[in-house]
Image 1 (cartoon, rainbow, N blue to C red):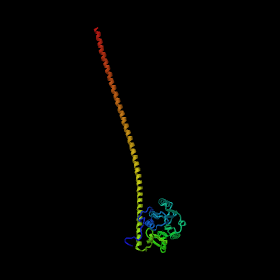
Image 2 (image 1 turned 90 degrees about the vertical axis):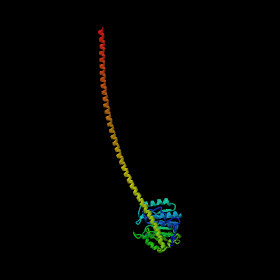
Image 3 (image 1 turned 90 degrees about the horizontal axis):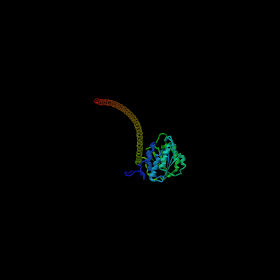
Image 4 (image 1 turned 30 degrees about the horizontal axis):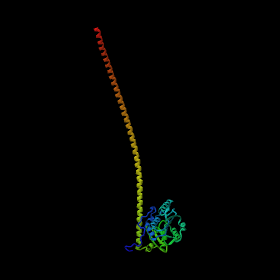
Length: 346
């Protein structure tokens, strides 16, 4: 590999550093391959993309995002029962509802969800019609081999098949066994990170954009460089999702704590208001009692003042009566004296 040239052509219209618009942290296994999903769509420019096993849609909507970013006239189909299995877990209609709502809102013109078994849906596709097939359904050897063989006639002369979980060797996963068989018959390239992703060319006319990837010697420095690139980019996506989930959890916890604090504050405020109302009522009652006492005392004082004034008036009236009586006697005496003197002179 030259110092100034990367071994594969980078995307034309969408960068591998693009931020995915749809990610669901509950199914993180495919998140590490989202940058490659962006690249492979740009590199192959598929006319039809079909995905067997959509689940929450991390891979499917990455393909769709790249289709739109590249301005491709691609038709897309996600086939799944959206009921789950022993590997992915069983779930209710809430998963399909979430995926369907986002699909109808974001990619209604070129993307269709097919709620069906893989076998039933297979009959509705013409032979040689699919350019890019992603197999990520039931992961036993028998199931994935059946899916590959059933859908192989549907692949076009440009056909590329992606197999997820080629690096998983536990819980009955058998994709790695089929992958080892197929790599001896077809051109291929395999990634080891995020449970592994196999890229298999089943058509006779491999698109030029992906030919260099499939031509690498698996032990070459170029192959190692490509694996390292997409593994690093995948870790970035995983880290962003993890940080987003952590931030969401922190926000949720903070919101819950804030709700508790608000409730406690509201309760304390209500208690303070109740205590304040009680205090005001007590002060009002005390004020009324004090006012009543003051009014009573004032009334008593007025009564006493009135009684005193009445006594003074009565005493004055007695003095006036005595003075008038004395004056009357004095007048009578003087009158009598005057009258008596006149009599003696006669």
